[in-house]
Image (cartoon, rainbow, N blue to C red; front, side, top):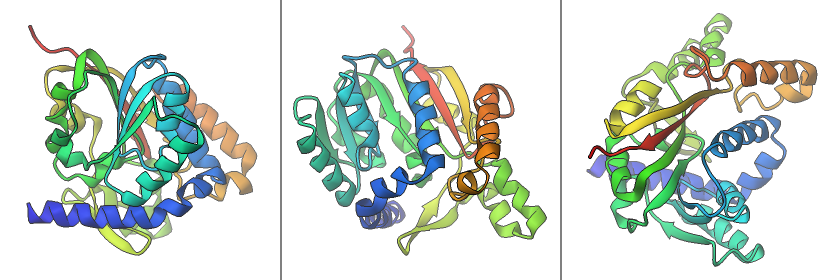
Length: 272
């Protein structure tokens, strides 16, 4: 328990330090913009205006604001005071008080979220990769999600082709870092915390039998991961070609699970 609290404290500090810079960083980041567009296209296959959405690790609220402005009611949660401060500013700027509520809450303390009969639960860009035991999160999903409601998780798997290819450049430690079962030390803004990598199969197992897989999609299987942010500027034509192939192949094995992230949508179908 002490290890979990220490991890959460470090995660909160890291992302609070990052919060003032986060939006500006993405605005100039072609890869992140493309990745978010793919996540949204995936989500909009099941999300419709009027849905009640619970967003986990909402960050500065880029997605929460998007969903709220399309007519959904959103309850956004995050552990970072800094990130939530940025989100509150957006709620005020866009006058979304009637559609977007905010709660400070970690992924492992979702019992603090009142059961709202959510139509959709959403977690983007690897928030769950900060949690060593996924069941600490997934055990709360049946309490929060409506019967036949949807859940989308965007997570980092153990196998990323671009990272594995680094072994040929002599970067063995980086190439195999995701394969460490006990996690790997990550850092943001000079704050170190643990990251853990899960396959779609492990994620489905943690969710349990009440959840049916709807769609599994890879995100950046053939195109470069976000830390190669200069790639689209140096090779714009090649980047367009690679992302086009990604979009065509992202739904089939192994490209739907060997990627920088995967997007998994499931439907809650409790047994009668």
